Image (cartoon, rainbow, N blue to C red; front, side, top):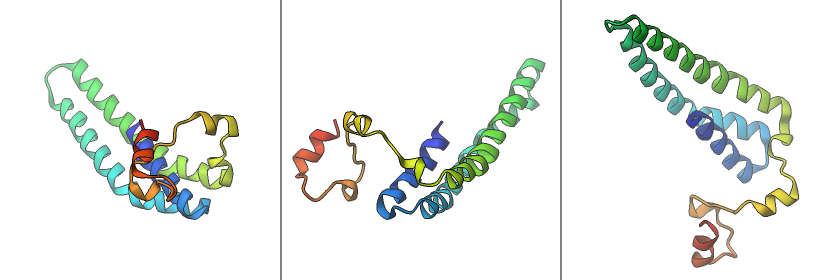
Length: 127
């Protein structure tokens, strides 16, 4: 799940700045690829270390989790998600108007806050 948050939130940030889906997906993938790879490799190595334990059940869990993380991080998150997002195009970012109005506007960085909002308005709208 955290891989998806890293990947798609960076893509959405670029989409908001440029409005270009291809650039947003490409830059989002390029800039989060190292984070996803590092996190996945750490988790894979931890679970692979379970294989060197004494109990068969622990070895099986270690191998299974390591394989699942490999497939999730490297096949799904770095190949399938960006590919599908390129194919879908601008529809990635479509949100029904009623839902857009219902969802609170949360800005992590000051760069995401519109200029017409004051600091107190930005803080109160993010809670």
